Length: 336
Image (cartoon, rainbow, N blue to C red):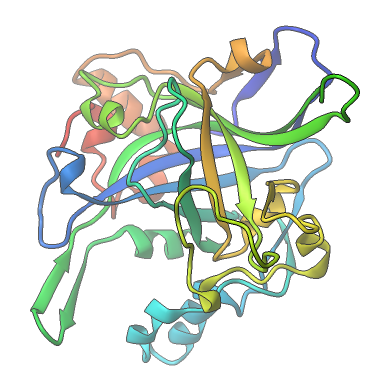
């Protein structure tokens, strides 16, 4: 469906769009469960971000291809899949390479720690997440979402069900500058804003239960992987083990200074596996908050039969991941 378009509805030079693209939402039922009927049955929630070329930004910097799970997957493909069980302890992304996103896709798989998004209509504690996988191969994301049989020493064979498609839309990462007030310097922060392209179908039970609103705005903060000593973490989490944290190049690490958290500026920070982030609910009305109206490229009216088929035919999510992820929750708005 593409990156869509945005319209500024009021003059606000303090909003700067840094990245545009497509956003996809998925959830996975718990191990050995064939279905999910509520958030209690959900093992994980995923967000997939696919940035696309915008204006003069056609090249993104990402982790080196031999690092993180991306590098491990390439190594396994080279040795016939040996060493698969070692993947659980994969190190975070490091190094750097440039990717022309006009020539090949760039995809980030983000895991949400609370198995939902923060409620955009409420002010709540930050929700923790981390970048699980960064890749230029769609197949890598498919592999991460598909069902799998595996063995354990204590419980024998287990079945990890395939992920379910929850929603798709367009997103923006933008810098927002606010006045510091009473002689203070202006302060800037970053937002992740999105709007679903396919209207929520039926009652929209899974979307509502997991706080995937038709549109939303979240503040995004990235955790310093090498934080200064002392102080406390925000969001009530300890974070990833040291070896799984991102190892940013010096110019990106420098964005933190002495801070424990920093805005996702530049968005290249999200192109490293092990990047830890906080999402903070800001608003469920992007236009009212930021003077920005998002529009998808395709919008399908609600309904059954032919309209569902039309939705499936124009859905990038279905085209890219439909063979491995159950699309019923996306197209019907009901739990599977």
